[in-house]
Image (cartoon, rainbow, N blue to C red; front, side):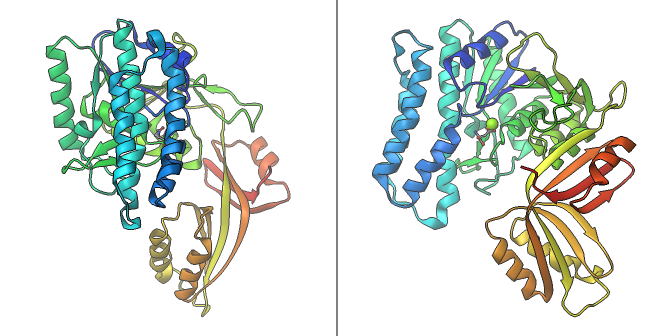
Length: 424
Ligand code: ASP
Ligand code: MG
């Protein structure tokens, strides 16, 4: 079994879906395809949900009509006569009926969010599965709400690997008994044991693909993207970027943590546990091998890797009473950060103070107040960015850190992190 994942950008048009068919049509010996919602559908559905939650049923329905219209343009390019397949129409009807029937309460926002936003993936996979079947690529549509068992942390659900493994293996065995070799399932979604739909966090489809691969003991996973593979730096920011053919799981985790947007950070663990290689392959070039991420690589990466994470807030925290035992207060600080779901990207402590680079948050004021409530004195700078250089060399050190405007530098033998004012 192999697992392929296609993101929203790849399937944003009829041409994209046709290219997906071209990539998968000759696959034999078991292929599980995980697909995201088409284009920017998830964002569009979030707008529908905002209206729905606020009781604006007409606006919600109108926004959803725009989602349907967008899919209609794709359907027109795929099916004879441009007719909406009945299975897709059924999904549209379910969303419209929910909007018309239900009066949601804010308390259940996350639950409603999952119940509705999941239709992006349900619609995309239904269109793709029907199209592949109509074009002679025989496949089975898998309802991941019946395959992925999760907890009830709506919007950020955790997958129960054991229970999901049992269900997924049963689905595949049943398909295989009917001679099915290709399966098409949704990324990003699952359901609680009670059958309530959940989602795994934005951009969670990569993670879905990794979990499917892990529980099915797949030989490999490929994420098809609009890049040639993994680069050492974002070419839009660093013109001198180069292609990296091979990297380790550890490299990939470090990259994802530092803000490289190649793969979702949660993706690596399930694969590493089973030593399943992860390929990052160019959607536009079926025969190019792209980059591979795995446990052992032939030679360590030679080039330094540069990752720029924007939208940082650099925060200084020190106990009000000038207590010199900051260690005793670390627990308090992290408990508050945790309470506000703060993403901490860098920590540096001195005798009496702690500096943190955190993701910008809408609740910054509240966060600061909460820290002050614990007898801390807090100052911060907004509009910062963090540059990480993994495997830096002397010339890089010279060029990036020995320049004015660095607010904070942190250096280990391998990694250099610099926090500075945002450059653009
Ligand atoms: N469609 C979801 C999102 O846009 C999941 C994904 O694409 O990975 O966040
Ligand atoms: Mg995506």
